[in-house]
Length: 420
Image 1 (cartoon, rainbow, N blue to C red):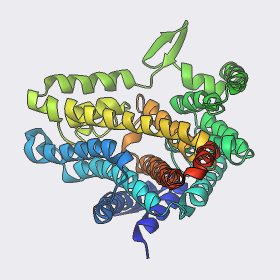
Image 2 (tube, one colour):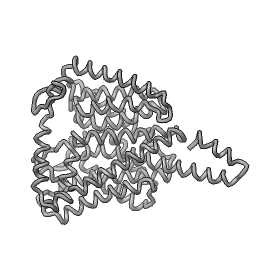
Image 3 (tube, rainbow, N blue to C red):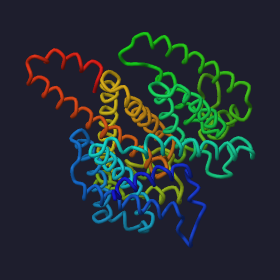
Image 4 (cartoon, helix red, strand yellow):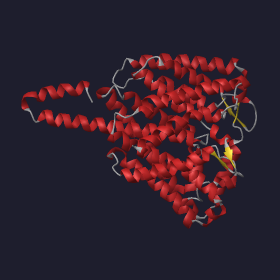
């Protein structure tokens, strides 16, 4: 029995509940907190037991592991971290552990058994569909409803689901475009501004085929259509317009007042805390979860500021470099798969779009501490990298074998055009 695959499968299916687990509590702990602990610990344990990691993920994996090590070190050596409760420290750190653990474990298991991907090809889209239907039901309470799970929580998870269905519609099942459109509509009705904008932006980009210049026509047509829809929604759907323009701590963009929902004051408070920190604290951070001390248990609504505050300049550098490296790997994997492995190109594209979406959402949201978003992101990206590594290795082995036979060398070259 492969317990690693069981863990990945359970993690995938739990995506359907988004953050509903926070409402099921036993004492001071929620069921989601228990799952965060189990996922963070067991995934890393399985990674150590499996040991063999595809070389494609060694670089970013090392940087992200260094990021985790820095978080642990700050708890031990940084006096400022002593002001935090163990619960606050562990909660943040274990979500990061879950992301890195599932990322590495997904790559390892896919590389070892590339055909055992039920959790990805069937489990994940079913979980996304279930989450979408549950949120649609909750909309009986009106736009922005949090009847079943949080509106912003659903919107952030939906960015990964939208990336999957857009990629699947491009390469695999054309009807999945309907699920993508449905999810984008639900994100709009969740009144999450950042997620709505990101979802609309990645839609036209998902229609591009890197080796087919004609698809740029499709890109511009979709971009124009989406821009028209966004214009109509902003001007004629009052809840959506109000969500963007209700005056709080507002700024101006094109003569229109935009409500930042207090983010400007939160960001300033975190920046002030960083400025007051000693040099050692600036370098390695003030400890995982330290931002909760600055804003009294709240969230900073900017994960890059959170990382700089909690993990210092060194930790922020580890995270950004590792994350950008993952974007580069999935982008190159997508280019390769588009030409040589079209059956799996949708997985590579979905991983690439998900990384871009979550990376952008980190500017104004708290996605990095949400296990229901970081777990599926890690699983999708890790699986995509492991799948590419397995097929790339298989192609090279086949070419070496064919080239050892002079009479069929030309046939081997022709085979590379259509096969991975």
